[in-house]
Length: 286
Image 1 (spheres, rainbow, N blue to C red):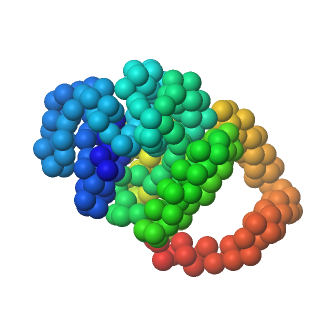
Image 2: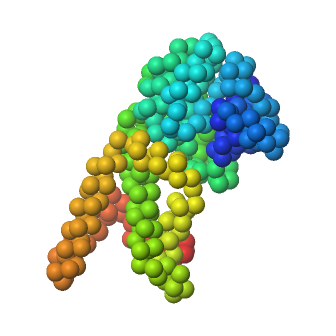
């Protein structure tokens, strides 16, 4: 099987190329920046080609592209897809990319996918993948992909693209947003360096979260925040909660603080009976 990775010189594209090559697959990478493309191809030991040529020759196509410009890129390669071909995307949102593939790709079978990890991951074992089939043909392909991934000890969940985006607004959108706001707050204290000198485990973990987000590409994070439809509502809920807790503390209302924290503990216990182990786990991580 010959696999084309469009956007193959990006971090995730290179991760996918290395994994597939390690399994003996024939990989072609493609992208707009010829200099980056040739450098990545040399490093990976993969073939470089134009997007049109790569898609024309491939049995399977993986679209590892930025959210911005995704639809235009799909429209550009669509005339070169063919019957019997499988086309996957690996973007962090799903409704828009899946709709774009349905709109322009009329041959072969498309499938929205989301690897729930970054290019720093070592292997697939223990990693999570979300697949978002929307038709019988796509579900059949998703079951084949699921089997392939589970054979490599990955965890796989199937859901609708819209449900994925709703949940990712919480899992990624809200988490990243909190990390950015936390980082912004730390910088405004003008005590970041000194605080780090006496930091405890909780601070270290929150700081690691903030630093991990800040170390990534701002363009990607901006695109993700703008693309997820549930982000604005969640950020509004976060702002309301922050103000409520701030009011409780500023009024010195100890009883209300304890009542609200106890209610939260119950809610978490209902969702995960083992959640109290988190305190010990935090120290293991820290």
